[in-house]
Structure formats: C-alpha cells, structure tokens
Length: 415
Image (cartoon, rainbow, N blue to C red; front, side, top):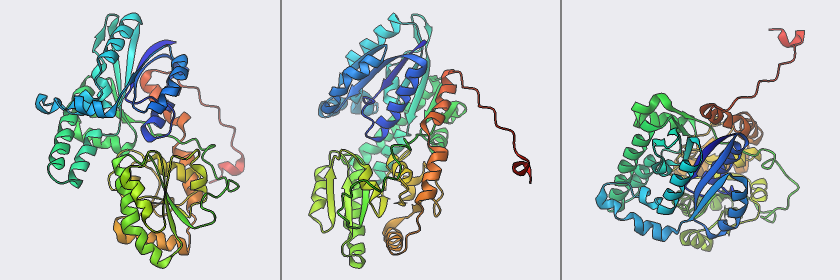
C-alpha cells in the first residue's frame, strides 16, 4: 500500500456531527487503500477516549488537544496580520513538527487536507519529491462567514465579512497549488468555481452518504414522545445556525401551530444545547433533550422532521437521516440546497413563517406520506461506498470492475 497523509480539523470519531461523519467515512475508505498517517485536533474532551483506537488503525498519528477558548484568543493577532482568524485557530507548532517529521520519515507522495485551514500544514515538496495535495473544503467556508455577516449588526457584521474575505483569499491560494479541490455537493462545487474561477478546472465534489441500514424505518422502537404528536429538529445544538433555527421555530412557528393543534410538541434533540436553546424549554410544548443515546426513535415517531435553517452550507446530514427513515421533512430552501431531493415529491421546501406554518399544518391534517420517496432518493444518491469512488478516482485508486449485467429478457428489451 502507498502512504498517505490525512489531516483533519477535528478527530474523525465518533461520527456524531456533520463534518465528523464525512471525515469518518473518508478515513475509513482511505484505510482500505493506503497506509494512512492521521493528524487532527481534538476539541471535545469526551473524544479523547477514542484516540487510542484510532491510533491503532493508522500507520502513524498525532492528536492535538484544542481548547476552543484558548484558540480564539490565539487567533486575535490575525486581525493586524491581515489573515483569516480561522488559520491561527488551527495552527499548532506540535502538529507542524509532526507533519514535517512524518513527511521526512515516510515516502509520502499524496496528502489530503480535510477543511481549508488544514492545508496550511502541507508543503509543496518533501525530501522525497513533490507532494500531491488534495483539498476537501467540504463547504465553501468563506461563504458561511459572509452569510453570518448578513444576519448580524455592526461590529460583528464587519468582523464576519472580513473573515469571509480573508478566508476566501486563503482558499483560493490553497486551491491554486492543489491537485484537486473537492466539496460536499454539486451546488457547493459550483459556488467555489464561481468564487475561484482560476481553479474551476480542478474543482469537483463527492456526495455524503447515509448508513441506510442503520437509518431505516423501525416502527417497533419505543416512542420517546409518549404518544404525543411531535415535530423534531436534530443536530449539534451549540452550532450557531442550529441555535438560530431552533429559536426561530420555537418562537415564531410553534405559537401559531399550537393555536390549531394545542397538544403539538416541538422536540430539539442534539448534543451540547447552548443556554439560548435550553431556555426555549420554558415555552409551552417545547422540549430540549440534549444528547441522546440514539436519535432514531425521535425520528421514527415524529409526525414531521423540520430543518428551519436560515444559514446553511453544504449538505445537512440531519435531513438525509430523516429521509432514510422515511420521514417527511419540512425544510428551508437553504437547508435543501445541497440535497438532490425534489421539493414537493420527496421533501417539502418552505420559505418564511407563513409557508412553514401552512405546510406543517397541512401535513398534520392530511399527511402526504413523502417518506417512501425520500428514502428511495437516499438509496439512489447517498450511499457512501458508491460516492467515495469519486475520491478514489482522484487519488488513483483502482476502481472495481462493474459486474456484468445479466442478459435482458425479451420483455425487458421491448420498447
């Protein structure tokens, strides 16, 4: 096997949030075809429990404990250095030393950076020759900061706009030197080609996937709602767009819905709920679960899954998981942007308060049962094994030969 360096901004296990899900499956795929040298940050103390197991699966590894508060303070000098704050946030001398030693010790010809800031660790050459760099931006992160700026007042709007501008400059510079730039969806790849036209010819994507066996309809699991009709929103509840979405749903949508459906509940299910999310539980019909051992019962027994995100980049795994479990999903156009589902027949797209209230009300009164079509879409477009072959093609992995198709019967051949 060839050696490959894989750098990630967050430990790729457990796969319990969007970027970690993609990183986990990417690492798992890479280990099938390469001797992987893994370098990453650990920003949650609970994840330290997984370091030893991951290290045993890799040719070599380096795990750097990242304390978010300290990292934010260390980022401040970037303001007068003219660089994006995200870069010093993920800059660590220990990881840089390990990368240098690893590239010197092993004949590594290919390196993959998972997320833009990790590309700052990759040199153009090593002692053994040129280093082919593959950059998985996942999302166009610089665009996210511009989106944040549009939603905030000064001075945060100015700070976020600066971050978006500086980070795009960095993303473009790294893309120019990369062999290939990958993103999480066709829509994100198209956006990056627009923002970095000089690298359009080497910008592609590979879709996320869903474990469609794990996330499959399971009507026999216990009902966490005790028989009540419930809407559910899942995700990491310390992530600002999720906090904003949960608050909008609880404060602007649920009061109107409960006038028509007094017993309706809204369940916010996800790890590390911020104080603003916890405070929503004081409202009638709002429940904040925090971390749960298994999200599937909450999806299975929900009347609807909702994704009321006002800011969304890339692909929302929470939507794919609900679709895989044959749930009808009501989501904003932003949340659906990176997903190939057809609004109206596989998911429901709703803009603004009026549409959200109207669509949810109609589904509660007369369900369309879009779930079967939703799961079919997941099975067609969101299988990890198939989607990761796009990454394999970039890395020179020999593709398996397609199985010969059985001869068609006369009936099958008829027009």
